[in-house]
Length: 79
Image 1 (tube, rainbow, N blue to C red):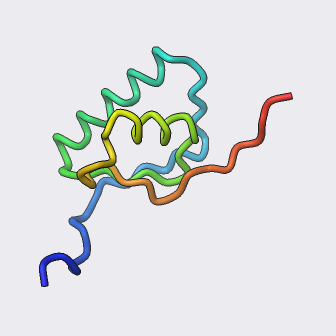
Image 2 (spheres, helix red, strand yellow):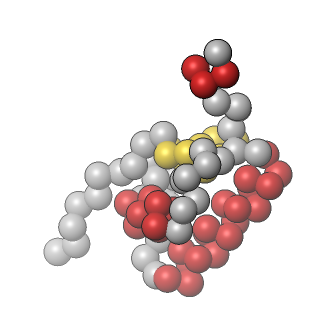
């Protein structure tokens, strides 16, 4: 059955050390992820920062499964 098959292999990115704290950097990162999808077909993000995960959701990038969130960090509030 087609619907139950594993998704296609994805280019995996470990983002545990990535900090995105401003809009221009976030926009550049989303553009880079779109380019990686064109090259690899799919990208899987591990330990994704919450801000990036939220942005990908709001812009519809997660809708078709070409960018996948394997895990999203639980980030502590500043202060």
